Image 1: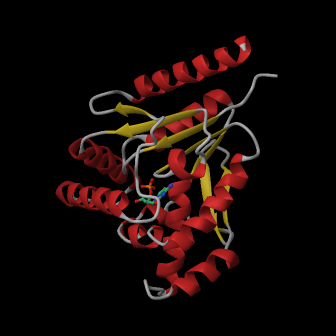
Image 2 (image 1 turned 180 degrees about the vertical axis):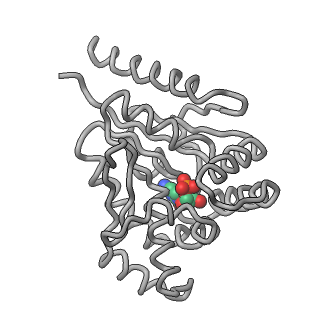
Length: 230
Ligand code: DC
């Protein structure tokens, strides 16, 4: 049987991680785990309950009480459920996006979600995207990719995504929000966004999705070839 590997994709907001990871998961028949969606669910749970930064105990109890679950839809897209409610679209809205940084800065919240992520990864071939996958969640991943892109390009990508989803958006506001989230994600104490020492950095500015996918699939093939040889 061909060995299945673990693939970690990290990088800042809108660097193309999830688009690329989904295509690769399909291509290889691997499980795709969107860890950002889990932090977004935790954020939505807090917003819906009116919990704030001083309510860490309530947030932690809520994470135990309201399960986060992924399901494959008929059209092959992934649905996200929080306490059995489909929140796939709700968690992409601006209020969630703009509050996710403070929730994901709590080490206790991260510990709970990382444990769930590691359990899912232990089931076989996995590709996960996030901020701390190569450094914390899957430090033993056979392939680690760190995707980056300019703020302008990332804002334009998210702008197009939002317009397609019918979410009202202003491009300049988006640029400022992406830069602010980059800063918070990279400067928090607990598991900040950081390239793992053994990760391959890839700048996707001006590069098509299919080229990024091709590059990563070539790396996977190299790793699997080495396994066969040894
Ligand atoms: O990938 P995304 O934009 O959906 O992630 C939303 C937020 O969740 C991001 O701003 C930081 C946080 N996050 C994190 O702290 N660790 C991860 N592994 C994934 C996301």
